[in-house]
Length: 464
Picture (cartoon, rainbow, N blue to C red):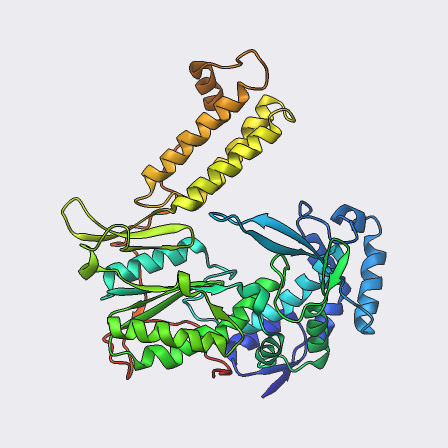
C-alpha cells in the first residue's frame, strides 16, 4: 500500500493507523521554509560548531535569506552535507575516548527536519521494550520496568550483552533497506545516502564514511533505533520469545540491552545465537562483556560480586526487605560515581577563578542536581548521599585554595550553601519493585502464562 502525505500531522496519524503503509511523498516537508525555521529555532545554541566554525547566532544574522537558499538547494538536490568535525570525549570508567561527529548549523537544521519527518513513521512500530531516544520514554522508566519484571515474574537468569562500537559499524546498505520499509520517496533516500556518506574531518584530513552513524548527529539516535528494531527487537519478539518454554523479556535503551529468562538453557541459547545474529548485520558482540548470570529469587543467595549486573549506570543486585523477602535493588555503578566526582573536581579546579563565588556555587549546584535527578532512586539514597558529601568537600577544598588566605570554615560554608539552596538527598524516582505497574497479557502459543503487552503495531518484517 502507498500513500501521499500532505502534512506532518497526517503522517503521524496514518503511520499509527496503518503500520504497513509506504509513504511516497515526504520530501516537500524537508524543503519547507517554515519547517526549516522551526528546526533552526529548536537547536541548542550551546552546542559546538562544525568545521565551518559558525555558531547558531552567526547563522541567525541572515536567517531568512539563509533558509530560503537552503530550501532552494534542497529542492534542486544541490545540497551536500559538510564533513562532520571529529572530536573526542572521555568514556566513563575507561581510558578510551568516545568519538563524536559535530555537524555544521546548516546540517543540523536538515538533520532535524529529516528526523521530524521520519520519526512518526517508526514510532508506532517500535516495541515497548525499546526505551532510548523516544517520546514519553526514559532511562528511569526502563530501569524501573526491568527491576519490576525481575521482581514480579519468574526470571532466574539475565543475559548481559554489549555491541562493540555499534554507532561506528552500522551497515549503510542494511540501514537503507530498513528505511525503505516505510519510505518510498526516492528524494528522501537520496538525501539520506548523502548524509550517511558525508565524511569525517579530523586534523584537516577528510575521511570517507563507509559505515556508521556518527554519535553527535541529531539523526543518529533515530537511525540506530531503526537499525536495532529490525536486527534485534523483531528477532527477539518473533523468533526468540515464542520458542521459549519459559518467560523471556528484553529491555533495550539505544545499543544497551539486557535479556531476562526463566530457564538457563534458553538464556544460554539466546547468548550463542545473538553472536551470529549480529554478525549477519555487520555488528560484533563484545564477548568479554557478554555473559549469562543467575539473577532472581532463586539466585538471591549467590555471590555478591558475581550475582549482579550493570545497566544504564546502575548496578542491579539481589537484596532483601526488612522482613527478609527477596527484593531487586539498584545502586549507582562504581565507575559512574568515580567518573562524576573526577569530572566535578576537574571542573571546579578550572573554573574557580573565572566566576564570582555566588555564580560558581550556583553552577556547582546545577551539576549536583543533575546527578541526583538521574540517580536518586529507591534503594540508592546511601550512594547518592556519598556523592553529595564528596562533592561538597571537593567544593570546600578548592574554594579555599583560590588564595593563600582560607576563605571559609565549615560553619560559614554551610550557611552559604543553605542560602543558595544546596541540594539535599531525597528520592526523585520511586522505584519500589513491589509497586511498579507492569502491563501483561495472556501469551499465545509461547508456553507462557503471561507476556508483557507490546504496544504499537507490527510493521514490515525485515527479519532474517
